[in-house]
Length: 75
Length: 153
Picture 1 (tube, rainbow over the protein chains, first blue to last red):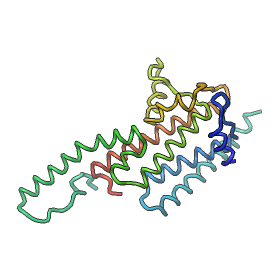
Picture 2: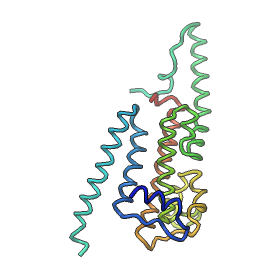
Picture 3: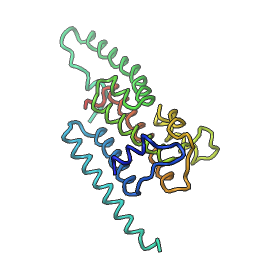
C-alpha cells in the first residue's frame, strides 16, 4: 500500500487525486504526527521511537474506537 | 523550577564578579537578539532553525513530518486557504496553512488542479495541510526556546 501510494504520488496527474483508503490516510497522519511529537518532546533516539510507537498506536486505537461508537448513527 | 536562560549559561570560570556579570548579561542579550532569527528560519523552511542550532535529528524529523503531511495533503487535493478569505474559519485555516512556510508557497506546484473537497480524500487533505502547519509552528517555538537556552535537549 505504501509503495503504491509513493508511486501514485510521483506519477500522479494533477487532475487525478491520489486514491488511498481512509484507514491508510489515517495511519499515515497518525505516523507523521506521532514522529513529530516524539521529536519535539523526547531527547534520545530510543525514547523517541518508544514514544512515537506509543502515540501511533493510541491514535489508531482511539480512531477505531470512535469509528465503532459512530457506527450505529451511520444507518 | 526557574527556567531563566541565565540558568543554562556556563558558569563563570574566572575574573571578578562584576566582569562575569557583564559577560552573562551580554550572552543573554545576544541570545535574545538571535532567537527570533532561528524561529523565522524554522518557519520558512521546516527544520532550518534546528539545523542552524545544530540539532540535526530534530531538523530532519520536522522537515520530513511537515513536508510529508503538507505534500500528502496537496496530493489528496485538500483545500489551501487564501490570505483574505473573509471569515474567521478561513482566517484560522490560512494561519494554520501558512505555518507550513515554504510548503504553503509550493501548494500551487503540487496542487495544480486546485482543491477537491467533494471527496472524503480532499477533506482529509485539508486536515493534513493544517496539521503540517501546526506541527511546524510547534517546531518554531521549540527552535526559539532552544536558541534562548531554555531547552537544553
